Image 1 (spheres, rainbow, N blue to C red):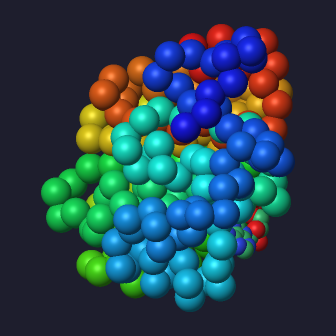
Image 2: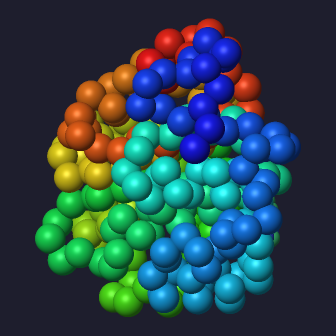
Length: 226
Ligand code: AMP
């Protein structure tokens, strides 16, 4: 897996990817079928109509499947959502009856969170017992969101403001989180969510796996990434 040490945020243990780079475009062995995915996830990908992984998927999925933390430079349209969701599904495998959220996807906006939830349902279609998703975004009723949380979700998809609010009000525990994604991380920081992100992260186990996807890497975000 190629890292790009020339960049200011290339850290040991972190992998960085750039869509459009020639590296990773190898014609052999780069398909979904060679990634060692479970039948349920592979069939869900095929059902969605994805035949060939996009460059970001080819480069981000294998290290995420191996348990590495990943920093990926990826824009909307690159296929980044599937790049972090496919390893998430492989890690979680199926719904767990033990109470506790095991994966969190943090999105800058309600619209992106809704879109991610839709991908979650589609790309986990054949997983059984089905994974449960909970969307926590501003604009929806807090009471309804408390009810969703009571249904023992496996995955939380949230905007930082609403998530922090619910963390405090519902005493939501993130102590079982194994996998966290910061999606469109540059926008999360542009929108001034740095404090909330630090608060949220502090409540998760330090051994969790982290994926950070961003179109750009401004200084503040590079510091956070470290
Ligand atoms: P995203 O960058 O995650 O917003 O994805 C952009 C679009 O690419 C979405 O419509 C996805 O359904 C689609 N897409 C993602 N991965 C693939 C793939 N491997 N093959 C074809 N389309 C894909």
